[in-house]
Image (cartoon, rainbow, N blue to C red; front, side, top):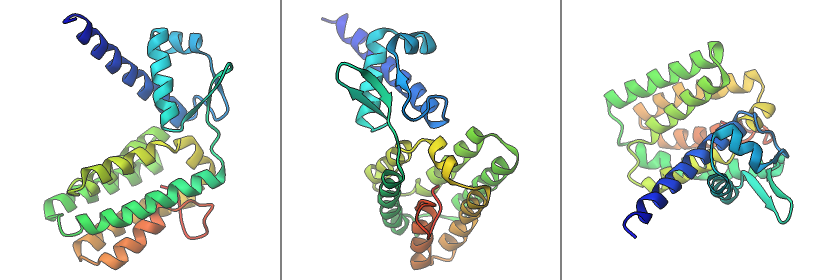
Length: 219
């Protein structure tokens, strides 16, 4: 029994790593919406066992990124405009709430770091790859939410971000929309510094809404 538990724990950690790798490839569009995920192909692609692949796919099914069809297998979930709108709406509600929890908890040092993250995100949009732009965007939001005392809220926000593949938002966001969303980061820093909560909450809502919604941009 003592030898079994570590092996199970290792297998569980390995399946989580495989799930993250598949999620990444779904996110950047390497595994597109509607694509069938053949387990034997995934085993070769990710160097994983059949059970690790199955566990990883079950994890992603729980997150809504893949769908298990009985007797047919797994398929990357389609992400229609209405589902995107609903996820973004929930995210907007939660980030508006989180804004009220962090606005008084940032100091000059954390605001300076936040501004630097905004600059890296803008540079990545103009000169970097899609992955670099997305990673710097996540970095900005992690720093903004770092002082939030409700860590469950923060975890839920990032879980919601993971439910929308980057490839999907890129299909709906023009360069102008992405530039606007990137500039929002600098305004977020300014509004936190002057402690203007109503304006910050309005901006956080705008910042999270889908381009399918006339008010906003999906970031």
